Image 1 (cartoon, helix red, strand yellow):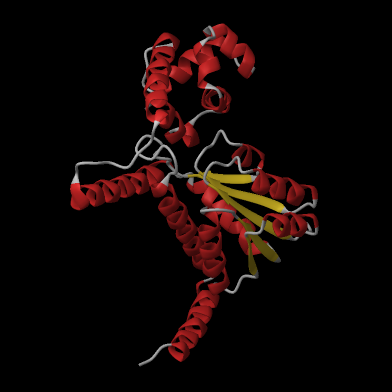
Image 2 (image 1 turned 135 degrees about the horizontal axis):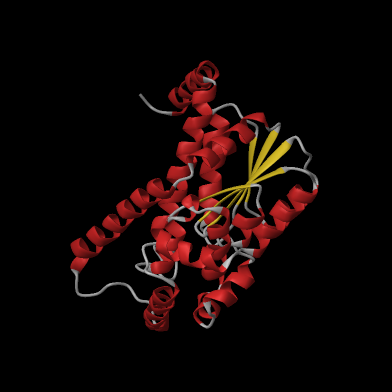
Length: 280
């Protein structure tokens, strides 16, 4: 699980180590075929930075990194052949494993969370005139939840999950606006395209994804990532969605803490609405 370890520690790397991590994560196979000097040249860092990077992730040197990448490659190829649900465990065993994986993902995400970026993201959203949240597929659920959370705080938040609409919206944004792009892979073409259009419009681009090596993470102004359990869930990171939602909740609470009086007023108004739509 060396790739997951590199991803997990990405927020703690130096600038040079971040370049190396990005190269390795984006193309592990290519990294395996290089010498330390070749990788250093590709990443535009000093050869000594390769050794420091390996040490920082608990390895003895570049040779061990290549061995670990090769071992993981073989394991991943076997996993990718025919991903299937666990069998022979019974309902209780399956449920327990899924819940344990979810809890571990949340813990790993908290351990790797870049709190400074979380604070910066909250500041950007609090100053935005309008906020647009982009997400498709399974991330559309997270995007919808994010809109609800931010709207509760009195922010002008809008959720866009239609591929055409989010891109049309993006080209009409202004520097006073902010977009929050949510994508597990960070490679979804529609979301990346909308983010790029928003950037050209001058809007602040924010992202939540599971992979620091992804296009969305690299090109957004501020990006946060969660821990992706690609070993237990190779097809679709089920537990990552929970981490995305928890990250949205954390972001909302940081925003609320910046203006507690205003937050309290909005919560009182929300509770009044809830009383009106519920039976006693």
